[in-house]
Length: 121
Image 1 (cartoon, helix red, strand yellow):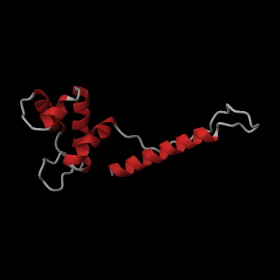
Image 2 (spheres, one colour):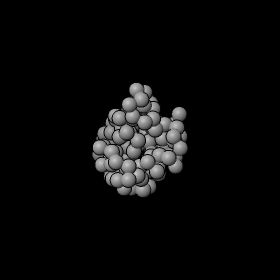
Image 3 (tube, rainbow, N blue to C red):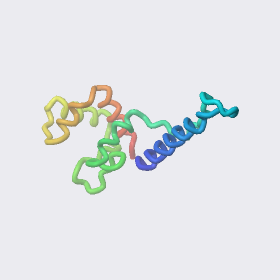
Image 4 (tube, one colour):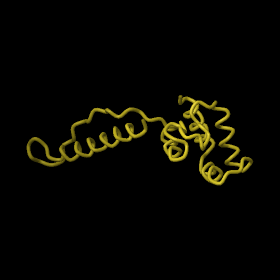
């Protein structure tokens, strides 16, 4: 799912770049023409989804850990996820990696991540 969103963003970026170059010369041959507007085919990606992209390597796509070596984040309650991330951030819940990762998140980002993973199935 995240790969398909990435490909849509990549295609939209390429279209915007090509559109900007194509409009560089006006119909009369003079430069400075305004590029034609490009229709937005890119779906809106939430801030939580953008933050969650960094979690994929360990917790799987959309927090759905298949192998079970790490906790499945998808579908946990927002409150539980938020509490865990805050505990990692403060050091109350020790971890080799998550303590360091969580320290980099603001409280707002932790809430966005918790809401995102809670909404996943």
